[in-house]
Amino acid sequence: MERRKILVVDDESRMRKLVRDFLVKSNYDVLEAEDGEQAVDLFFREKGISLVVLDVMMPRMDGWQVCKEIRTYSQVPIIMLTARGDEQDELQGFKLGVDEYISKPFSPKILVARIEAVLRRAQADSQEGRLSCGGILIDKAAHQVEIDGQPVELSYKEFELLTYFVENRGIALSREKILNNVWNYDYFGDARTIDTHVKKLRSKMGARGDMIKTIWGMGYKLEAEE
Image (cartoon, rainbow, N blue to C red; front, side, top):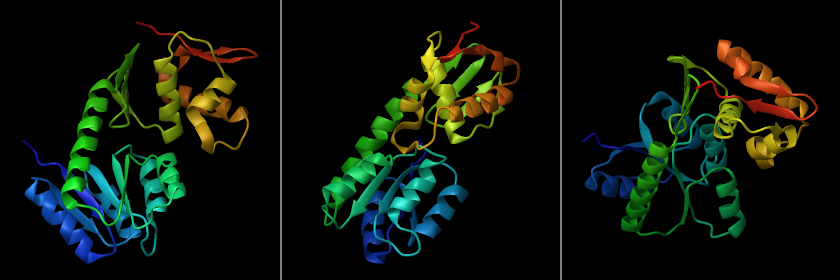
């Protein structure tokens, strides 16, 4: 069985070594980064990283910014490490899409157990995370879309928008409902951004773009062509 690849990001070399040694003993491959910029470069250069262990306080780019950069393109599981026990830090982490949050000092054995639990959960989610509808195939875990067997490159929001349409196929969706479910807490514009994204999405979908129907004065509906 192929060994899972873990990226460990911490500016303290002793901490990285401690975590790496326990992960290697548990049959994981380990990549290391000593600051945020190096972590982002390594994440996007390397293929097949299964999980990121990420410290908060680091030079050049902190853990929050690294998390934002990764989450723009990937839903890979992230476990944040921090010396702080502040509830606000923990809430910020979850808003950014962090899967687990562990305060220092911690037991390396507990960290490995948490990693294994997060990976099991991610694997279960990925098995349930494939959607298909009228020639559209969505792999939520890999963040990939195929239409009529051909890969389609979508932005993060275009991917989320298409996924939401497919998950709610046949249902009339108001612009407000789409905003609440796709843009969530980080949206600061108005409903016209939906029209712009739908226009771009239809264009990238080619002939299948006609599946997204406009409901005048309300919003949109994806009509399945099974």
